[in-house]
Image (tube, rainbow, N blue to C red; front, side, top):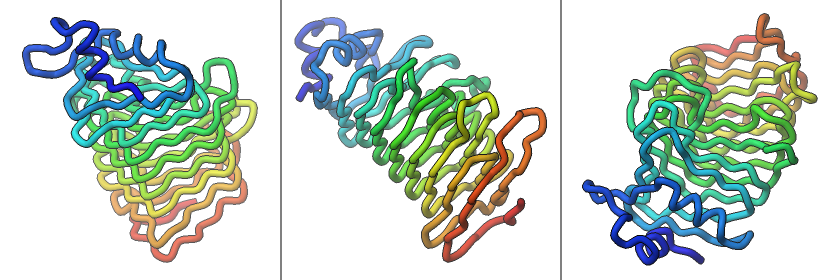
Length: 272
Protein backbone atom coordinates (compact mmCIF):
# COMPACT_ATOMS: atom_id res chain seq x y z
CA UNK A 1 0.00 0.00 0.00
CA UNK A 2 1.24 3.46 -0.92
CA UNK A 3 -0.12 6.69 0.56
CA UNK A 4 0.03 9.45 -2.06
CA UNK A 5 0.35 12.16 0.55
CA UNK A 6 3.07 10.38 2.53
CA UNK A 7 5.13 9.54 -0.54
CA UNK A 8 4.94 13.02 -2.00
CA UNK A 9 5.67 14.69 1.32
CA UNK A 10 8.70 12.50 1.92
CA UNK A 11 10.31 13.14 -1.45
CA UNK A 12 9.37 16.76 -2.08
CA UNK A 13 8.25 18.14 1.24
CA UNK A 14 8.94 21.76 0.30
CA UNK A 15 7.04 21.56 -2.97
CA UNK A 16 3.94 19.50 -2.27
CA UNK A 17 1.30 22.01 -1.24
CA UNK A 18 -0.03 25.08 -2.97
CA UNK A 19 -0.93 28.27 -1.20
CA UNK A 20 -4.48 27.00 -0.76
CA UNK A 21 -3.32 23.85 1.01
CA UNK A 22 -4.09 21.62 -1.98
CA UNK A 23 -1.59 18.98 -3.03
CA UNK A 24 -0.16 19.95 -6.43
CA UNK A 25 -0.15 17.13 -8.99
CA UNK A 26 2.16 18.52 -11.68
CA UNK A 27 3.34 15.05 -12.64
CA UNK A 28 4.30 13.88 -9.16
CA UNK A 29 1.36 11.53 -8.63
CA UNK A 30 1.72 10.24 -12.18
CA UNK A 31 5.33 9.27 -11.42
CA UNK A 32 4.13 7.37 -8.36
CA UNK A 33 1.48 5.47 -10.33
CA UNK A 34 4.04 4.57 -12.99
CA UNK A 35 6.68 3.38 -10.51
CA UNK A 36 4.78 1.06 -8.14
CA UNK A 37 4.45 -2.69 -8.82
CA UNK A 38 1.40 -4.07 -10.62
CA UNK A 39 -1.48 -4.75 -8.25
CA UNK A 40 -0.48 -2.08 -5.73
CA UNK A 41 -3.03 -0.21 -3.63
CA UNK A 42 -2.68 3.56 -3.87
CA UNK A 43 -4.40 5.53 -1.12
CA UNK A 44 -5.47 9.11 -1.70
CA UNK A 45 -5.77 10.50 1.81
CA UNK A 46 -8.35 13.14 2.65
CA UNK A 47 -7.52 16.40 0.90
CA UNK A 48 -7.63 18.24 -2.42
CA UNK A 49 -5.20 17.14 -5.14
CA UNK A 50 -4.90 20.03 -7.56
CA UNK A 51 -3.89 19.74 -11.21
CA UNK A 52 -2.95 22.93 -13.02
CA UNK A 53 -3.09 22.97 -16.81
CA UNK A 54 -4.35 20.39 -19.29
CA UNK A 55 -2.65 17.35 -17.70
CA UNK A 56 -4.50 14.51 -16.01
CA UNK A 57 -3.77 11.14 -14.42
CA UNK A 58 -3.38 7.90 -16.40
CA UNK A 59 -3.62 4.46 -14.80
CA UNK A 60 -1.49 2.39 -17.15
CA UNK A 61 -1.11 -0.82 -15.13
CA UNK A 62 -3.23 -3.00 -12.81
CA UNK A 63 -3.79 -0.89 -9.68
CA UNK A 64 -6.31 -0.28 -6.89
CA UNK A 65 -6.82 3.45 -6.36
CA UNK A 66 -8.52 4.01 -3.01
CA UNK A 67 -9.88 7.51 -2.45
CA UNK A 68 -10.62 8.22 1.19
CA UNK A 69 -13.61 10.32 2.21
CA UNK A 70 -12.93 13.91 1.21
CA UNK A 71 -10.10 13.07 -1.21
CA UNK A 72 -10.77 15.11 -4.36
CA UNK A 73 -8.94 15.38 -7.67
CA UNK A 74 -9.47 19.00 -8.73
CA UNK A 75 -8.69 20.47 -12.14
CA UNK A 76 -8.56 24.06 -13.35
CA UNK A 77 -8.27 23.87 -17.15
CA UNK A 78 -10.85 23.54 -19.94
CA UNK A 79 -8.70 20.90 -21.72
CA UNK A 80 -7.88 18.84 -18.63
CA UNK A 81 -7.61 15.09 -19.29
CA UNK A 82 -8.93 14.26 -15.80
CA UNK A 83 -8.60 10.55 -14.82
CA UNK A 84 -8.05 7.84 -17.44
CA UNK A 85 -7.43 4.11 -17.20
CA UNK A 86 -5.73 2.26 -20.06
CA UNK A 87 -5.07 -1.04 -18.30
CA UNK A 88 -6.92 -4.20 -17.34
CA UNK A 89 -7.54 -5.12 -13.69
CA UNK A 90 -8.05 -1.61 -12.36
CA UNK A 91 -10.27 -0.57 -9.44
CA UNK A 92 -11.17 3.03 -8.73
CA UNK A 93 -12.73 3.16 -5.27
CA UNK A 94 -14.84 6.26 -4.57
CA UNK A 95 -12.97 8.62 -6.91
CA UNK A 96 -14.09 12.24 -6.64
CA UNK A 97 -13.45 14.46 -9.66
CA UNK A 98 -13.99 18.22 -9.57
CA UNK A 99 -13.51 19.69 -13.05
CA UNK A 100 -13.40 23.21 -11.70
CA UNK A 101 -16.23 24.94 -13.60
CA UNK A 102 -19.78 24.26 -14.75
CA UNK A 103 -19.32 26.59 -17.75
CA UNK A 104 -16.35 25.09 -19.62
CA UNK A 105 -16.38 24.87 -23.42
CA UNK A 106 -17.25 21.28 -24.41
CA UNK A 107 -14.35 18.86 -25.09
CA UNK A 108 -13.98 15.12 -25.81
CA UNK A 109 -12.40 14.46 -22.43
CA UNK A 110 -14.26 12.86 -19.52
CA UNK A 111 -14.11 12.94 -15.75
CA UNK A 112 -13.24 9.23 -15.84
CA UNK A 113 -12.38 7.60 -19.16
CA UNK A 114 -11.90 3.87 -19.71
CA UNK A 115 -10.05 3.24 -22.97
CA UNK A 116 -7.75 0.75 -24.61
CA UNK A 117 -4.34 1.77 -25.83
CA UNK A 118 -3.87 -0.75 -28.63
CA UNK A 119 -4.46 -3.85 -26.47
CA UNK A 120 -7.69 -5.36 -25.06
CA UNK A 121 -8.75 -4.00 -21.67
CA UNK A 122 -10.99 -5.85 -19.19
CA UNK A 123 -11.96 -6.15 -15.53
CA UNK A 124 -12.48 -2.50 -14.61
CA UNK A 125 -14.38 -1.50 -11.46
CA UNK A 126 -15.45 2.07 -10.77
CA UNK A 127 -17.12 2.14 -7.37
CA UNK A 128 -19.13 5.13 -6.09
CA UNK A 129 -17.56 7.79 -8.30
CA UNK A 130 -18.57 11.41 -7.74
CA UNK A 131 -17.96 13.72 -10.70
CA UNK A 132 -18.93 17.33 -11.27
CA UNK A 133 -18.21 20.37 -13.42
CA UNK A 134 -16.27 18.68 -16.24
CA UNK A 135 -15.89 19.91 -19.82
CA UNK A 136 -16.86 16.59 -21.42
CA UNK A 137 -18.73 13.49 -20.26
CA UNK A 138 -18.85 12.37 -16.65
CA UNK A 139 -17.80 8.76 -17.35
CA UNK A 140 -16.83 7.55 -20.81
CA UNK A 141 -16.32 3.83 -21.52
CA UNK A 142 -15.07 2.92 -24.95
CA UNK A 143 -14.52 5.33 -27.81
CA UNK A 144 -11.72 2.87 -28.55
CA UNK A 145 -11.72 -0.86 -29.27
CA UNK A 146 -11.72 -4.07 -27.20
CA UNK A 147 -13.04 -3.09 -23.78
CA UNK A 148 -15.00 -5.59 -21.68
CA UNK A 149 -16.09 -6.48 -18.15
CA UNK A 150 -16.66 -3.00 -16.73
CA UNK A 151 -18.67 -2.27 -13.58
CA UNK A 152 -19.79 1.25 -12.70
CA UNK A 153 -21.47 1.11 -9.30
CA UNK A 154 -23.47 4.01 -7.86
CA UNK A 155 -22.03 6.86 -9.92
CA UNK A 156 -23.20 10.42 -9.27
CA UNK A 157 -22.51 12.89 -12.09
CA UNK A 158 -23.40 16.58 -12.05
CA UNK A 159 -22.94 19.54 -14.38
CA UNK A 160 -21.22 18.13 -17.46
CA UNK A 161 -20.89 19.55 -20.96
CA UNK A 162 -21.54 16.12 -22.55
CA UNK A 163 -23.25 12.87 -21.48
CA UNK A 164 -23.39 11.83 -17.85
CA UNK A 165 -22.37 8.21 -18.54
CA UNK A 166 -21.56 7.01 -22.07
CA UNK A 167 -20.67 3.56 -23.45
CA UNK A 168 -19.59 3.31 -27.08
CA UNK A 169 -17.66 1.48 -29.81
CA UNK A 170 -16.46 -2.12 -29.40
CA UNK A 171 -17.38 -2.47 -25.72
CA UNK A 172 -19.08 -5.43 -24.04
CA UNK A 173 -20.27 -6.75 -20.68
CA UNK A 174 -20.86 -3.48 -18.86
CA UNK A 175 -22.93 -3.07 -15.68
CA UNK A 176 -24.12 0.40 -14.68
CA UNK A 177 -25.76 0.17 -11.27
CA UNK A 178 -27.89 2.95 -9.77
CA UNK A 179 -26.48 5.82 -11.83
CA UNK A 180 -27.52 9.36 -10.83
CA UNK A 181 -27.00 12.01 -13.52
CA UNK A 182 -27.99 15.64 -13.03
CA UNK A 183 -27.78 18.60 -15.41
CA UNK A 184 -25.80 16.87 -18.13
CA UNK A 185 -24.87 18.76 -21.28
CA UNK A 186 -26.10 16.00 -23.59
CA UNK A 187 -27.77 12.66 -22.75
CA UNK A 188 -27.99 11.56 -19.15
CA UNK A 189 -26.89 8.03 -20.12
CA UNK A 190 -26.07 6.89 -23.65
CA UNK A 191 -25.26 3.62 -25.39
CA UNK A 192 -23.91 4.35 -28.89
CA UNK A 193 -22.79 1.76 -31.46
CA UNK A 194 -20.95 3.31 -34.39
CA UNK A 195 -20.52 1.41 -37.67
CA UNK A 196 -16.87 2.45 -37.64
CA UNK A 197 -16.26 0.04 -34.72
CA UNK A 198 -15.53 -3.63 -35.40
CA UNK A 199 -18.57 -4.62 -33.32
CA UNK A 200 -21.53 -2.88 -31.71
CA UNK A 201 -21.80 -2.36 -27.98
CA UNK A 202 -22.92 -5.67 -26.45
CA UNK A 203 -24.41 -6.94 -23.21
CA UNK A 204 -24.98 -3.80 -21.15
CA UNK A 205 -27.12 -3.78 -18.01
CA UNK A 206 -28.44 -0.52 -16.56
CA UNK A 207 -30.21 -0.80 -13.21
CA UNK A 208 -32.28 1.80 -11.36
CA UNK A 209 -31.17 4.83 -13.36
CA UNK A 210 -32.00 8.46 -12.57
CA UNK A 211 -31.44 11.17 -15.19
CA UNK A 212 -32.63 14.68 -14.29
CA UNK A 213 -32.31 17.87 -16.34
CA UNK A 214 -30.46 16.30 -19.26
CA UNK A 215 -29.96 18.89 -21.97
CA UNK A 216 -31.03 16.52 -24.77
CA UNK A 217 -32.31 13.03 -23.83
CA UNK A 218 -32.58 11.18 -20.55
CA UNK A 219 -31.46 7.63 -21.43
CA UNK A 220 -30.63 6.78 -25.04
CA UNK A 221 -29.83 3.49 -26.77
CA UNK A 222 -28.48 4.13 -30.27
CA UNK A 223 -27.68 0.66 -31.58
CA UNK A 224 -26.24 -2.11 -29.47
CA UNK A 225 -27.13 -5.73 -28.77
CA UNK A 226 -28.53 -7.35 -25.64
CA UNK A 227 -29.06 -4.11 -23.74
CA UNK A 228 -31.14 -4.52 -20.58
CA UNK A 229 -32.84 -1.89 -18.45
CA UNK A 230 -33.72 -3.39 -15.10
CA UNK A 231 -34.47 -2.69 -11.45
CA UNK A 232 -37.29 -1.08 -9.51
CA UNK A 233 -37.37 2.10 -11.56
CA UNK A 234 -35.91 4.02 -14.47
CA UNK A 235 -36.42 7.75 -13.92
CA UNK A 236 -35.63 9.85 -16.97
CA UNK A 237 -38.26 12.43 -16.15
CA UNK A 238 -36.58 15.35 -17.91
CA UNK A 239 -36.27 13.93 -21.44
CA UNK A 240 -37.43 10.33 -21.49
CA UNK A 241 -36.02 7.03 -22.75
CA UNK A 242 -35.25 6.67 -26.45
CA UNK A 243 -34.30 3.60 -28.47
CA UNK A 244 -33.07 4.81 -31.84
CA UNK A 245 -32.99 2.58 -34.90
CA UNK A 246 -30.88 4.83 -37.08
CA UNK A 247 -29.02 7.95 -35.98
CA UNK A 248 -28.66 9.20 -39.54
CA UNK A 249 -25.40 11.01 -40.15
CA UNK A 250 -23.79 9.30 -37.14
CA UNK A 251 -23.76 5.92 -38.97
CA UNK A 252 -24.74 3.56 -36.16
CA UNK A 253 -25.65 -0.10 -35.87
CA UNK A 254 -29.31 -0.96 -35.38
CA UNK A 255 -30.42 -1.96 -31.85
CA UNK A 256 -31.11 -5.65 -31.29
CA UNK A 257 -32.58 -7.52 -28.33
CA UNK A 258 -33.30 -4.55 -26.08
CA UNK A 259 -35.05 -5.72 -22.91
CA UNK A 260 -37.04 -3.47 -20.58
CA UNK A 261 -37.34 -5.35 -17.30
CA UNK A 262 -38.28 -2.51 -14.97
CA UNK A 263 -41.03 -2.39 -12.35
CA UNK A 264 -41.80 1.30 -12.96
CA UNK A 265 -40.86 4.03 -15.43
CA UNK A 266 -40.99 7.66 -14.37
CA UNK A 267 -40.22 9.20 -17.69
CA UNK A 268 -41.23 11.85 -20.15
CA UNK A 269 -41.91 8.91 -22.44
CA UNK A 270 -40.41 5.82 -24.01
CA UNK A 271 -39.71 6.34 -27.68
CA UNK A 272 -38.61 3.84 -30.29
